[in-house]
Length: 332
Image (cartoon, rainbow, N blue to C red):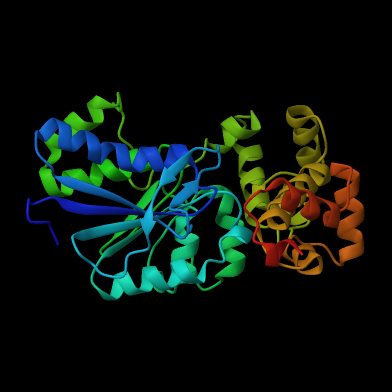
């Protein structure tokens, strides 16, 4: 619903520890659109739970905010912006505000970790969605009925979800184009030297070849399969059959191209995934062991300590102590 001057209200609910870059990438294009149009196309409003009216970002910058909205007013779209770790996102007051706004007809969006809060509020049921790739593992464990795709952003009617970083620039371009046309949206993107606007389905991360530093197609197939099968690891024989090579050749490829063996690589991928779950999810250590293909928690703990030099419980404790935004109830 536009205001009396025709401006469309764009709101941002900020969760303590939100990523400043993601937030700026989302709100600055709307400010630039106003300047380029010479009139108020969009009116930005910032909301938070903090009683002192300020929300602190991950970098320590503070944004003055008004209380969470209870009425629609001129709000057309409201984004929830979250960073940090999912253990910090148990925010019933924000969940209730999102549900209330959705009932009032406001389009609801999430940026970076924001879609996690949307899911917790029950606003992504049967909806396509995305979120920052770093939080995908915890998201899938917390909401097994939802299947996020690691696209840059997903627009699904009255729901919009977006990865973090600079992906909101692409999303904002699409929303401005939706209202003002492609030519005007192009001018806004040029304002930010954003000359290569990403498509919604473009990947968030570098390719497997770039991340692993290899270009051998068979080896890449195996590495990508490893990433997809952390919960139920395939045997060397099954993986060799999938790649149409002998087990001996499979081992030789890993030693020649990666510098260590098939088993070591697979274990590292699984334990790195476990490390994200320890930091981001409320799952018990036994549940994380099962979710990463270990037969029991003791075996998982031995492998984890061997690779990272500390136990899974120590990893979780250090992650909690390192975050200034962990609610007291979760820190105990």
